[in-house]
Length: 532
Image (cartoon, rainbow, N blue to C red; front, side, top):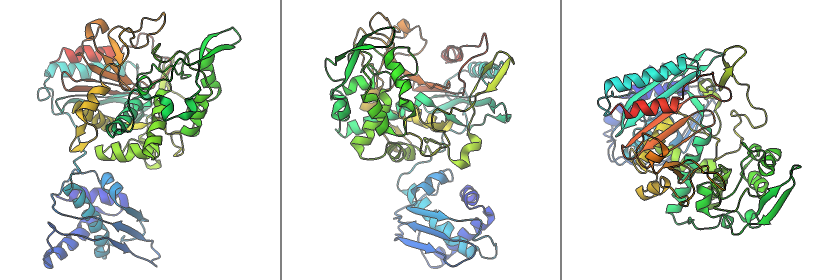
């Protein structure tokens, strides 16, 4: 029953898992011999320390109260360790000798006690999803899912992308969860189910969830002016015209942009990702997205005019980085800490961070593009104009900064499918999730629409999601209310609430594509909706 736990713990402290087992067995024997009952046992705070040993030291602070227990072999050991009050292990130098398992028993049993405590107090199994249950069980035809897998494998074989992971789940059952190709063409490293990805703008829905958690507490309202939380924006100006030299004509805002407009990209802000106008040039010239922290980012944005009056047009913008700053201001927590404590830990998303930990760097996929001269995919050089993903001090960008795994992001999506809850962890109320996936743009405005721009018919925007409110107008096979987004390196997802279904595709591709490359998103959609 405890074999997996022992093996995982052994990996962390780098000793034989048999030694871990023996240590735990000895301590459990002590419990039985002294008539300790693990059920209804209250363990008070205790500190186990071993000082003065030339082989190192182990210190653990533990504060569990055990009321009842049911051991779970699939509870993530990383989550257990994250919940310890303080754990310092200078391992490989202590408890290395099999003739002293009792010492290791103290360490192992202390961690085991926390393991029991977490499970007894409602911390759920975070292993889902691991493997597919089969097409039929998930509500699809076997031939349809086989065709889907074959199509995605062909996209990789044709070098449209170097590698891919894809997942389709319906009613909480995984129809397919497959990998193909390489995470790095230079190293010939295979794409694996635990590969880490730059998810870029798929960070945005996570930020939206964080902000909605604070909305549920009554800490902000959709009609609040953004300047209520960012006073630096009280005197915003708007660019009306500009000349060939980039000189702008500016006017004051007619009114302050609202939180609703900040959430649906109609507040008027620029971004600097595209556009040759002076506003987007100013974003690039001032290095808004290369800011050291959110405070610096806000100060830079405050000095740049809006592209349009609030509510006038939909323009993909820096708005979600500003949302992350607002989460920080309202909650009193660092933005990354808020996400970690309120979303990632409860959902078991231990791979999702703003930087790649040293021990995980071998899992981090590279970004690729097509090289027409060499007629093959090549690895893109790492950016030097922004902090590296390996830097723990890089900005906590709510608009595009997270790294995640397929497993982790799938858990986030299933929480949304379930309208705010997963495996006992309640993140949002159903009402909040429904607000997020409801189009909030004014009737005459669609996504990417504005003055003299018709936008994309049938597609609006909610809280950090695009929303297909009319599939026929949008020329989509998906159900009404399907919401989606994607990342700059090609990762993409959608959720169809009419089918309790989500799709997740994970790739790392930017820049040039192979001539004639398939539209993988359309290919996947068509096969999926023909496979019921």
